Image 1 (cartoon, rainbow, N blue to C red):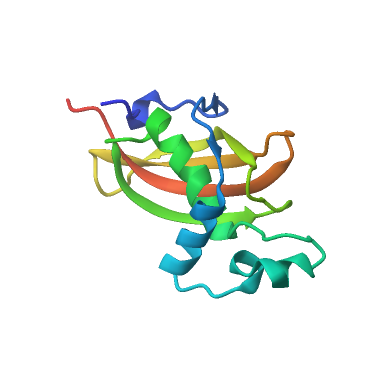
Image 2 (cartoon, one colour; image 1 turned 30 degrees about the vertical axis):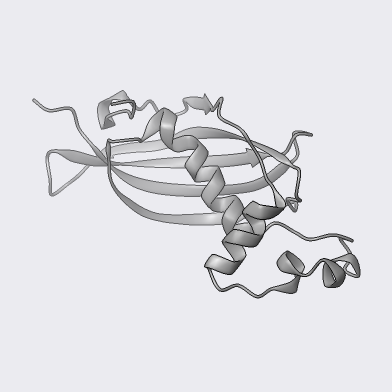
Length: 150
């Protein structure tokens, strides 16, 4: 199992995830259609061409999911009990078709559960950057993580 257990997380540690993804028109269109999001900024090239951006924007919820998804293989695959929530989610710069996204994750806090001795909560800050190292997304996420079996 590649994911880390609660005891293996160190506050302040930064993971620089090697997995990257170039976002395609298909990614954006499929995600928008699957989530029933008819926003023309994402799916209507003519409309988007007349916007201040001049081209379609990638759906920000796709960007959020991609950012967290890229982190999973390195830190939480198979050791997460539950995703508890996200806060302070921001998208300071748009993502466009053809942008390549890379992600860094910092461990913000680690604590044992007060009610269940086999688990604890880790708070992560995820940051996504495009190919020009421009920050395109950031969020703080709390996950309930397994402890090592005794």
